[in-house]
Image 1: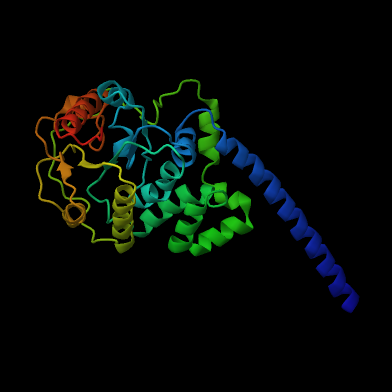
Image 2: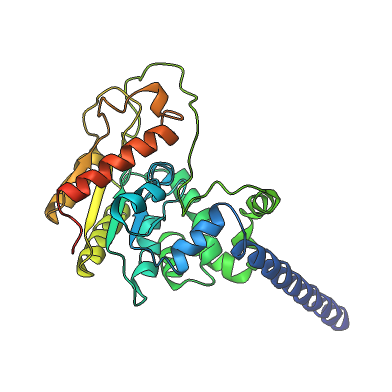
Length: 312
């Protein structure tokens, strides 16, 4: 009987060893292709995380990605620009990648953060945490800031990613295949234009995003602001246009404005600006199209110059 147990244990150890080697081997292959994607989101994110040396950096969600035209920023200010926004993210993600822009010898001359209406209510439901986990896990093995963030937010997922390298990248496989099969790059220094419009109906009443405040997201917003200010970098905070009827601030917007005000920063609120709430300026109800983005980027750049925000 003892011999049978020893035989079983030996086979189990061999099986686990094979699984470990296969996991590390396949995981390393996927990691290589993930980190070296020539086009698409991952390529832009890798730059935003590791070496954003541009003068003007933009942070935010998909609304930032599709709103701030980096070419117009450069033409307007005479400064290099990079859009560090990421689809489906909020300030929790932005606060994790911000140190990458501040650790080198070249620091940005201006940072813009685009705030959405649910900015600090984003993790109030389980789906918000799941999306964050899928975005952050691919970086926890190579980036200490993401590892620390994962430890705070979802330690069990972090442990799984440390045990299984494949687990860290399991949500990225289809994206990797898609981006390697693409021929055209629609990413202009992080900015992704959305041509045309899918808008059919007039703007509706805004009733979404009534969740309460997520304290961790609020803490990350305060961290983001303080870190930028401690590095003596001008910070511009913007609530960009939304395709909706005018609405009263929800709790997230109200608290965001309060937090910025405590740091002597005005949140530029364009959410219901009537000159932008037009079908031909929006790709869908959440994102400006190319025409709207160009118009809005020019206005923000003009305001930055008029208010003398950039340090000479």
